[in-house]
Image (tube, rainbow, N blue to C red):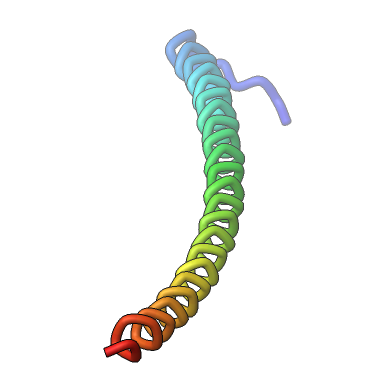
Length: 90
């Protein structure tokens, strides 16, 4: 490889500006990737929190259904007792 005297300052400036543009593009891409990774971590944490909340809600619904079933049994027993006492006395 030898020095070509036809290379002028314009070519050198172009190469320097291209290198600077590459550095800035690389830095910008790195910044964007870091932001995407941060966003992804936050979304995963939110998804885990919502899943835990859904599990708690599901267990609360199950407990509520069990309580309703218990109340239905109690009401049915009270209806029978009512029929036995009031209607049976007539």
